[in-house]
Amino acid sequence: MPVLLVGCGRMGSAMARGWAGSETIFVHDPLADILPEGVERIDAFDTLGGEDLVVVLAVKPQIFGSLGSSLHSLTHSGALFVSIMAGITLGGLSDALGGARRIVRAMPNTPAAIGRGITAAVPGSAITAGDRSRVDALLAATGTLVWLDDEAQIDAATAVSGSGPAYFFRFTEALAIAGEKAGLPPHIAMQLARATFTGAAALADQDAAPLAELRRQVTSPGGTTAAGLGEMDRGEAIDRLVAAVVGAAAVRSRELAG
Image (cartoon, rainbow, N blue to C red; front, side):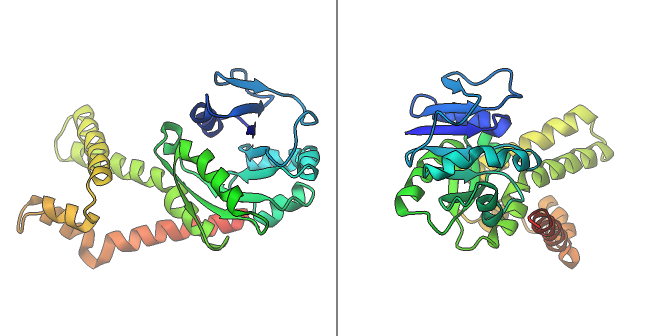
């Protein structure tokens, strides 16, 4: 089945590479000088259409405002739209696309670029079981897909998983800085922090034990890890900080959606 990718930046390119060999891929992105192998560039949409076509909207939201009307012919032909744009609701998408009803709103995260992402998606009212299966198959190229029951949940999903990689990167930066202050050379502190971050993530991915159990396995009573965790948990500091971080991101997601 044909796929039209509108926008071929980092996320769009990752998707296109994941679909290579299994999908017929068309790309519309006047700003992209180089496209992934196995795709066909198109400048206009009037040569495409039909219920088999999946249109993946991967442009920046501010660009979509001037682009939506040019996609109306695809709406009228019955195409399925999948948006990975932040801050544009199902209703906003439908209005901009000339009344489209076969719409899925999705929020991937940046590990999708290496096939290790997770995407939260919410279906529009006209999405069928067959449409869901088609989206499942497409987004499998980027990692795991989770379907949400309510569009209101996508703001929380954005705050947890969409923005989440940046939180882990920021914590790792802070860990490296703390190691430097504790007496390590800067490059050694960063090497230790990064390898610990990626190693712990890999372990959590491969070991089915609850995270609390993995944490306990590292924590000897009265030992160094227990001392460090004690500071994290003092006055529920870590829980209060993360709740504030996720809350702020969720509020901003709702603001962007109007």
